[in-house]
Structure formats: structure tokens, C-alpha cells
Image (cartoon, rainbow, N blue to C red):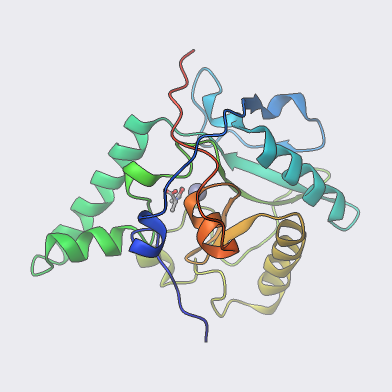
Length: 217
Ligand SMILES: C[C@@H](N)C(=O)N[C@H](C)C(=O)O
Ligand SMILES: [Zn+2]
């Protein structure tokens, strides 16, 4: 079994980010991609991603079997929102496990939400997505997008034992995105990134290409 490395692991968190200056682009410009509004913000910040990530997503879209599309749920996330998500989840873990130390809570929280200071969504380097048909029907992936480890009994883990058809759908997603150069966070089948610290750790790059962005509308 391969080792599961979390975002809080120093092998990821201690990597530097060398900002390359690439712009964030608006996914609404690309009709190839299907877009979902469950995480929408009024200005559409959640539909922005670095140009290099978009390029690879379009390659992945082209590699999917006919009739299937990538359905983007959330891309860019502002720092304040990442901080809120992290604090809320850490607090829930603390309440459920009052004997856990702060250090252990930080590690356990990072299974599901990135520590804000290294968060890949804040850099426009990560995207949460799934698959849908041309007519917009979502494929069964074994859990909902954003199901937590607790509510899904760890079925959110990419290699979890899920019903056969859901496993096949996950493999279709994995094949296309991996071939296009994105990397997956193994505790979340829907979370993919390029150019962030996790990508650097997986590919052996010296540094992330993208640092945090402060997008204002
Ligand atoms: C929970 C999910 N939406 C997510 O994005 N998690 C990752 C690890 C993150 O916060 O970057
Ligand atoms: Zn994500």
C-alpha cells in the first residue's frame, strides 16, 4: 500500500512556492467544461484557475470517453473562506474528540481541509470536480463531492472500496486527469491540482509554481 501523505506533512508544507505570475482565468470562457453552482459566490471567483491548470483540464476533458464532461464545483477560494472552513472543521473535530491535542487536530483536519497558509485553492492551483453526462446528469462516484471522512466513513478516499460502477467512474476521472498532468489528493477523489505544493511533492519538483492570490472583484 502506498503511503498517504497529508497536506500538513512537512514533506508538503515545508516546500517553498516560487510565484510564476501566471494569471487566473475565468472558466466561463471554456464551453468544453461543465460548471456547477453549489459553491458559487456572487462574483464568480470560485470559477477562476491558473492558466496552466486550465490548459491541463482541457486536455483531460479531451481524453474523456464521448458523452462525458468534467463538472467543476469549486476552483479559486479566497483566504478568508479557507480560514473559515479550516477553523469550522477543526472545531468539529475538537468537540467530537476532546482528548486530541491541537497538533493532532491540525493533522486530522488536513485530511479534509488544507491548512490555510499552504492552501492550493487559495493559489488558484486546485479544483474540485466530478463527471457528468452531456445532458448534465452527475455520475455516481460513491460519495457526494465534499463528503467528509466522518460522514462518508472514509469512502471519500480516492482508493476506497466503493460499489463497482462508482469505482469505474472514479477510474475514468483518474485516468483523464492524471494523463493531463494533474495530481489527486488521496483523501478526496474530487480534489485535483497542478503547480501547488502537493503537486511538487508528488512530481519531485523543488517548489510550487503558484503562491496565494488575493482576487478582488
Ligand atoms: C473539502 C474540499 N472542498 C477541499 O477543498 N479540501 C482541500 C484539501 C483543500 O482545502 O484544499
Ligand atoms: Zn479541493
